Image (cartoon, rainbow, N blue to C red; front, side, top):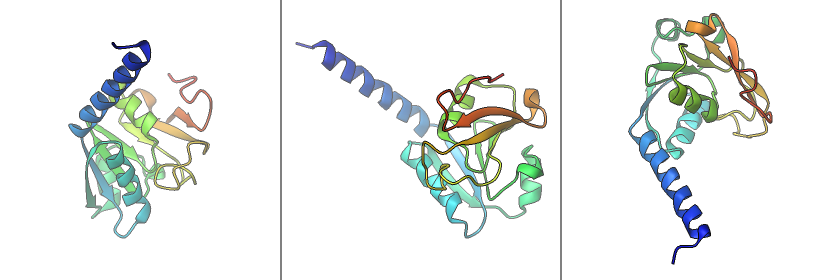
Amino acid sequence: MITRRHFNTLSATALFASALSARASTPMRVLASPGCGCCHAWADLARMRGYAVTVEELTDPEAQKSARGIPLDLASCHTIEVDGYAFERHVPFDALEAVLRDRPEITGLAVPGMPMGSPGMGDDPAARYEVIAVGGKAGSGTVYYRAGTEQPFAGRW
């Protein structure tokens, strides 16, 4: 006999398995600075979440980032390409996955600076920093997500 508890557990397990399956079919390309440990740490976290990650070295960072619509004032050590979007620096997975799910008319997301606790920089869910949407409806930059807050998407356009 299936109890409510068993049903809830099975439902949660199926949902988690479905999310992993969808992620595994989503190729993610990380363009990393040669010898940068945080780039590879971010990629390892993406793999742990089930993404199919490949890592390549940046050969001409300025040109490669500009070609993907990343403003150079937000450019950093790694750029992630996934499903038509570009993500710069240590973008948290909740924000990245919201973009992939909701498909906003933007180029992508960027995290100013290299905040301690962001994915690849210690991965502390309580770390506070802003994630900026760029391109398209976001123009040259609009706050999309506030990491480490109770309502990280509050005020999202």
